[in-house]
Length: 370
Image (cartoon, rainbow, N blue to C red):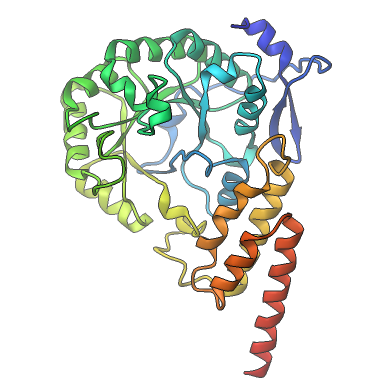
């Protein structure tokens, strides 16, 4: 594992059109960052509550998606996709991709980097790297239910290894220094069994614990158990803990989130899948009924432009990932199926722009006839 000094030597951090990026290579010089963390340790405590946050979602909450959300309706806090500590702390081809995942724009602040792994020493190194990149906080993924993550003894697998989980939080806090460290987890692994697990997490004095209201085995197959999330809140309060508790699972709108806060007493809510096709979510609208067809098409254009600028390099992410978003954006648009099928067959962002331009021309012609 490289030392912090060697990691810093390999990381050149710069601003490109407002985006903080990092690239690796022996020919690049280390750039010393300004002190970005003065008075940031308690940023969570300074935020107005309740908190409404973007949930970290693999292959979704990338730099382009987060930039789009921040331009339209900014949440309380942004999360990155999760990043592998093993890949981040070793010289490998995947390391460059991990650093791409950690790109962010200043307008996203406060922005939290989420890490996953199973080795405390790698969390220590990764936390130092994340701190050097200027993030506002670090979150540890202890809730991902996917088999490939579980097989690495990471994500929700840590629920079964509470001693290791505590070591990981401690190591991450040492590496993070003045950055707040939080945890995202679930209410159990095979079945609902949260009490001892949550008490162990609270004892680490993590700044925030986000609770997804399902067990690992439940994946997303059943409705989230918000009653259990409420029990977690009660448990945390009974200990006198200052740790904030966020709830996550099946929240469809900001109104729904507000109701969850009132009913279950959480300090805030994470919203995830509800954002698909609705980057206006944090404006307070439950759906996109208020959004014109022109606006929807222009959001597709803007999202694609951001993706093209930041992530479309095949050596990084590649354009095909962008296509997964088009179907959700096109709901309610005339000829949506045809547009979706055509966009799915595109090879470049420019192909998408042409389809959008054609659709806008047809829309204008129809309006003139009417």
